[in-house]
Image (cartoon, rainbow, N blue to C red; front, side):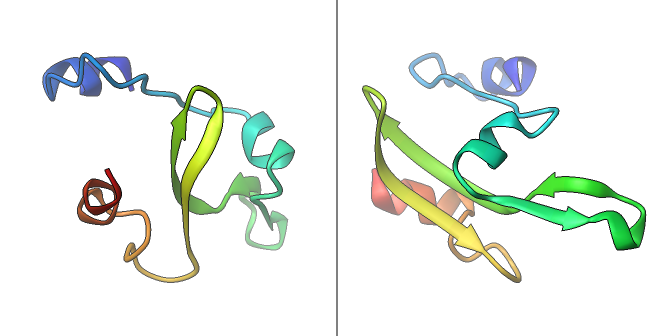
Length: 76
């Protein structure tokens, strides 16, 4: 995430990864895929936070309509 943010000149944005799913679990966005041999993962979502307050949460069941870059930019 850090390298991608630097590559995109996103100096004003904190890029976060959730490698073991702690954040996904804390916000109720985990997805149990153990039946498919993937374990517990994160749903696909994008979130905009401002000083710790969630201003936008786009959760996708299929596709990327709510979590795409375009969807996020439209919310900014």
